[in-house]
Image 1 (cartoon, rainbow, N blue to C red):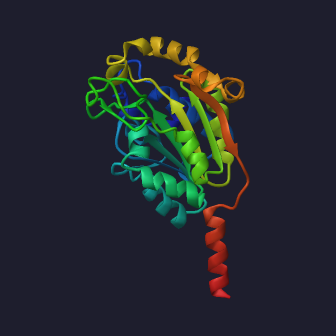
Image 2: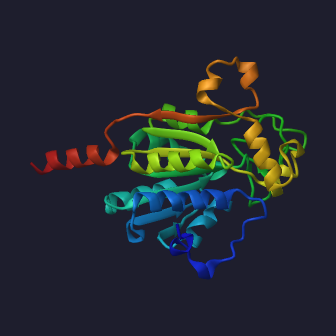
Image 3: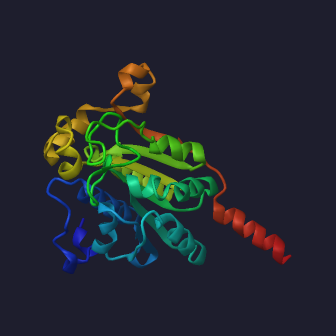
Length: 270
């Protein structure tokens, strides 16, 4: 396929660091769009603030770069105004689950027809390497120089519990799974979340050298420390500790927010 037809070539080269996994995710988004045959004018790609927030600037869709944590709320407005438009939302772990945490929970609760791609790099990569809601316990960041005392959010379990109709989890190493999950998410009716563990050699890798300090080393770490949901069911809590459990967490058919909204409108007009 021709990636260039989907890119704003005048915005290249991109500004992501060497070894960053964000470009891998961007290519997967483009492949999913191409596979589904979506027209560029029918897509809106929305982001908040952070390294992932640069994504809309590189693609030739309808794009919106919003304020920190507000990508889902802006996207909700677009979807209500343009219900036939395909909404793809990209957000980092901090953007989605810290300042944007309430928007994340309520978008899942409403089951509004949005597709959220979470770039989870375990850290605030762009703004100084601070610990994020997903930084593993004991790991180092600029705000946790002696190790992180907090328990991290499990983004996929949170989305599942809050009411999302499709939730999947993978890494930038597992590109075939990433493609499959994105296509499934984009075709799902309701709120879809694809959480992707992506590498940040600059802010996370330098502080936590056991994960690797280069993109290639961090991809190897993802490969060696990821397990499937099926395998995890056969393991005890101690064996799973430190592993990134991948797979489809939920895929359920339930009324979307737009269906409920339209039903109420119809009743009010009768």
